[in-house]
Image (tube, rainbow, N blue to C red):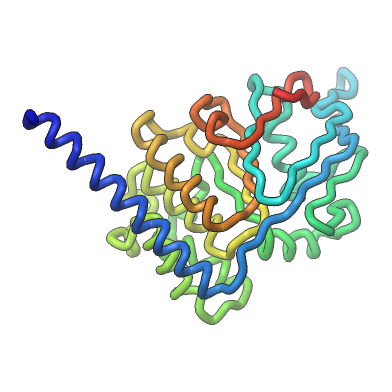
Length: 259
């Protein structure tokens, strides 16, 4: 075996150990918290329009979709087709012009702003393309913040366990500006998963990462998803992401199509 082959095999083994350790840490955290959760999503005849000076602009047109509990779904399509708008509707951060969204047994249209905020803090995790970490907080602070807001006394302990699960115990006290892009996205994944959401949304989670780093982050995300059993919906232009999902749909012109 040549030196290059030995180095490649060593790197492969190290990556395998890293992924195993991450999954083991996350399984331990889930066991401490008690339950594996997932939820169904039902989107029925959703329309979203905006008034402009030149007339009404239709962003989503009669979009309907059913996502089973625990499913992984990729939403693909060209820029401006309505993909991110659909994620905003699923998160309750935006309301449709007409139609219904049912997440589990929660009808989002029947919830006021406070109820939606409470629902998001308990049941929803979001991973953004641009990370959206708070620059004045360390990695540990960013991950523990959602739990602290929810009043959980063991917020720091859970955040530590989650950062261990994403392989960042050596970066606990580092601020976002001191982290690489891949490390920032791993902190964002930890923050999104730390409260064990039943629904996890991702908007181009590898969009700001180079190919190699994107592959590592993607493998980590799907490894942790296997253990959490949450329902995972990803908006992406990346074929690697879509191929890993159980199902995919395509958006074009504000309409949903089976891919």
